[in-house]
Image (cartoon, rainbow, N blue to C red; front, side, top):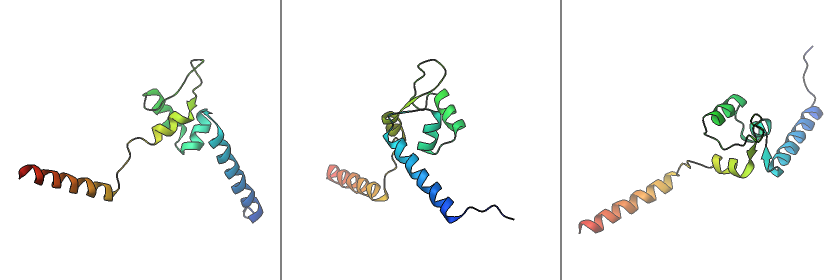
Length: 103
């Protein structure tokens, strides 16, 4: 006999997941488990990033790690990749500028 979840159980789990997501959005400070859920990154990845200084964090007691949500949001939005339209616009601007200078 398979242990499959009923539609009602899946619905409850989905609703609980949405509530957890809304709760995380309201927090201003995360612990490692909160950050894992917020970013989708594994704990080992997050610990590696903290140990190498790649992600901003706080260690008020020297052991447990905390993260400021605003700083994490900024960190997540680093190294933005330009759209193909933005790259094309920049290329056109550069070519136009070079043509004007060569005249």
